[in-house]
Amino acid sequence: MSIGMSLILAVIAGMLYLTRRLCGDMMLERPIVVCPLIGLILGDYQTGLALGATFELIFMGAQTIGGSVPTNMVVASVLGTAFTITTGQGTEQALLVAIPAGVVSSTFEIFAKTVVSVVLARADKYADNGNSKGISFMFFVGNFIHFLAYSVPVFVAIYFGMDAVAGLTESIPENIMNGITAVGNVLPAIGFAMLLNSLGDKKLFPFFFAGFLIVAYLPAVNVIGVAAIGVIIGLLYVFNDKDEEKSDSVF
Image (cartoon, rainbow, N blue to C red; front, top):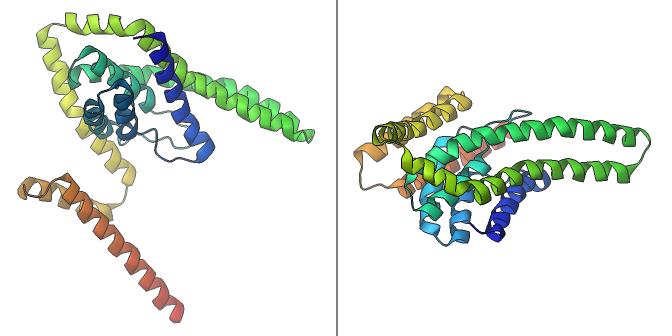
């Protein structure tokens, strides 16, 4: 891939991180957003959309809570989508690139957090002296370090390593690739398990199984139909809670 396109994808990966830091978590780092965006830039939006849905199933339980560092979804989504579109490989080969890339890239984020701890110590000194400009400067320095933790791995992997990865996947024996395909089919189930584990509320489990039964036994209802039913149930809960609050306020 050209150096220009590699830089564009690297900057996008870094900017997706900054949106969470500067604008609040708008979920722009989710694969369902990242993969179609990369597909649109590379001229294959349909493949990007399909990969976004697949990767979202796998990473839906991965959440950045507190100081935790889960698998880097942005780097995994960007590299997996770029690899699939540029090489014409399938979803299984995309997983072969995306999963290890996401895990390895999380170490870059850990390193960035370690370096930023030094920056924060400097910011504390500025705060003690009442230097607001120094605090603001340290804030931008810390975010720039995290920006590099996302953009540098993407640029290096795309510009220098894409051909090597493509050659590696083509040399994998068929029986091993079949095993990778089987593992890829199991990963969405793991993603669901992680999501259910993070929910931790038994009151929500009936809705999960209700959605499963609707899809399994009512083939006329597609995913959009199930999502619409979920929205209606959610609205009913919101309206009922408001009615209960009004009744409690009366008494």
